[in-house]
Length: 410
Image (cartoon, rainbow, N blue to C red; front, side, top):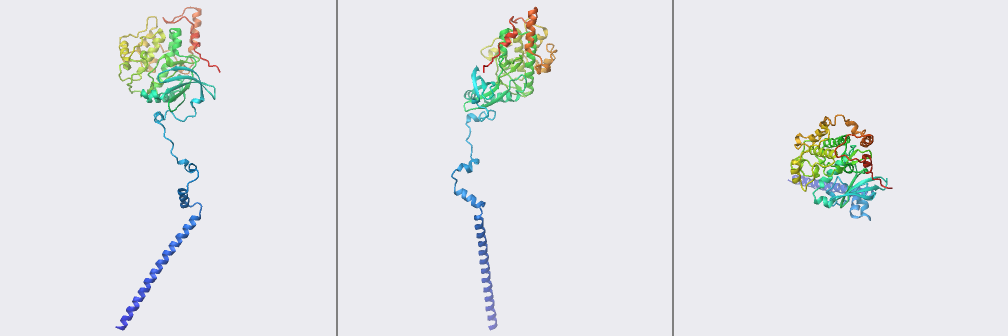
């Protein structure tokens, strides 16, 4: 029994010593780990590039100039609603501003704004600047219309018979569209001065306008406002199409529904508030051809499109006697009241006898001069009588064209 108790006592002592040894080892291990971490933390704090130290100091010790540290992450001030409505077509910050130009004179005015002749201060070159009121545009719900205008003219202005858009931007209250300035006047003024053009000259002018319409239609655009006021003449008498305010994007098989345009040039389907396509532009070209030949409009304008529709339905658009059969045939096909039967493509126009001898490549590259045609007709008139339209004036056509040059004094 004594030996047994002694053995048990020794076993308990060994167990107690082992437990104490384990507790001591665990404590030493924890102290060693903590001491190591403490040394690392002290070393890290001494490094100038320490992430913890840098973040802590920036968080709790702000710089004397907060924008010096946080300027790159600041939130920009939001745009006003009047500015955001016209983005991105009309940028707010543009390299060119209104102060870059000097106004010379007022060219025209309308309900939406005005057009000014301006001179760029840096280069001295003259431009036409259209200034539009945002308030009036929003009131008339014409925001998308203005966007389409500047986009179409900027993208498609590379055509030789289209006046290109050079700059466009916006301020808080106005829109600005700057285009090249054509100083030789409107086609309407030449038409009023002469009272009517010869078939040879009309053939060239209509061919140039047909090339423009075909270019726009193939690009997916309907113009909707073809009239003599929107056709300018350059120094050689070639047409220059301006004012894309009513133009819009329209696929070749698409349909538009808005009743818009100038009364005397609007197609019957437009006046009737029916869906219409690019054929409406070819009706306007027919009205243009009739008016240039005869010297007057086929019908006078009415107060609204309902009365105009009735008047158009009752009117016969046959050219008067005295004009050639090919010219009468073209006008008849262009002014067909059924759009599906109307002449409505450049390909069809080229095959008409009236245009069969015209080289449209020469017309496109401006190798045929309207001014030279007028000079030739004037010389022929001096030598003897020549064929002319019934309403052609006896005044000198070259002088009439030359009178539209508006030279700005430097």
